[in-house]
Length: 170
Image 1: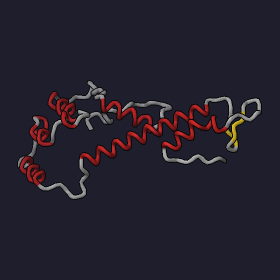
Image 2: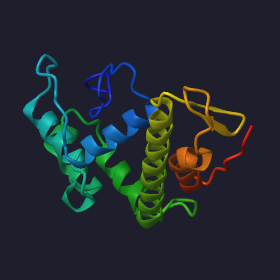
Image 3: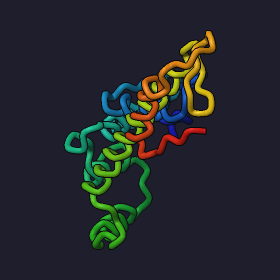
């Protein structure tokens, strides 16, 4: 909210698929690769809190209790706000709340599926870059002779299989 964009955003990368942008953003998050715009006025306390919130390893990240005691959080806080926060934090978590392990498992699964999708894109781009075309499930070389369709389609078929998709000839 301070900067009007996500901290790990790549900017305006043209001709890059959204899925690849997401993958690159995840890599930037894991390596803490972000820049804070110096033209945005923010106090040292605010920047300290922001940097501590953006730590990729949860054990190194500031806790909610520490946030609530941070000087930037306490600045100009309305009367009784700390008391109200302590009350709500003392309540048991809702039953539908996901556990950290569940969230990590979902992120790992998403990262794996993203890598498979990028392999698929690479295989498709590799086939498109050749001087031949797949027609009706058969491979024809540029001279009109029939090539080896199974050999040519293997990288694509492997990528589709990895993505749990099926190869279906025209």
